[in-house]
Length: 311
Image (cartoon, rainbow, N blue to C red):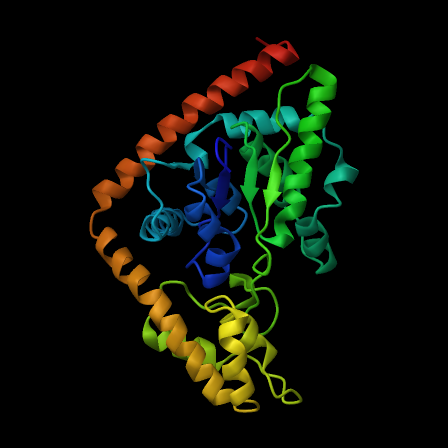
């Protein structure tokens, strides 16, 4: 990843959980990502309350800092602070067809459930493509289920390049094996919308409650959901002797998982509590990061406007 431009984004839609961490945030920290974008405009599809939005934005920045993201190495910024995101999205809209967007997973899922789909939800992939392409991004760490968004970004970039001349890089997804999709307590993908999460900064009591609620298969001696989540914290080589010894003893295996999650979460939780005490520092990180991102994005947008003939 040396000399690669790496961008990652997270929607501030609620408390982060271990699925967020292992699916994307861990990669973001480990890789010392170039950009960490707080996707607050994307979040408007879900959160439409001013006070709640402000709190969620602040919380997600604190979360990243607590996990070890260094603002001296990574530009942490708010999507809404960089107007080039919405401006370039409109430009991309003019070369993107409705049938193409109808293939997006989020749209098809909402339609299948009989939901009335907002223009924001329908247009979500175009704004995400803009988020990625504005910064000449090489690599985007994502969960396996988010790979389609990178494909949209590549397709839109390629189409623009074909029409107006070489302008955008074609980004690549980075999906770590075995943690592309983190299972929730019910076996489905861990998601706030499913209510099946284990919060990343949870109290000991919350961890116990979440783990004990993990759905198990009474027909199996090894509870697969428990093992899958446990595999995030220990290697399979470390776990196999325990799970063989405790075959059929679901409570014992859940207790072992509780111990390992508590041990993992405790230092992150303590660091988060310390960082949250200094709101001035947090706002300073956001302001400086957004200024840096804006300079890069505005330069790219200027190149685009020259290519399309409006500048």
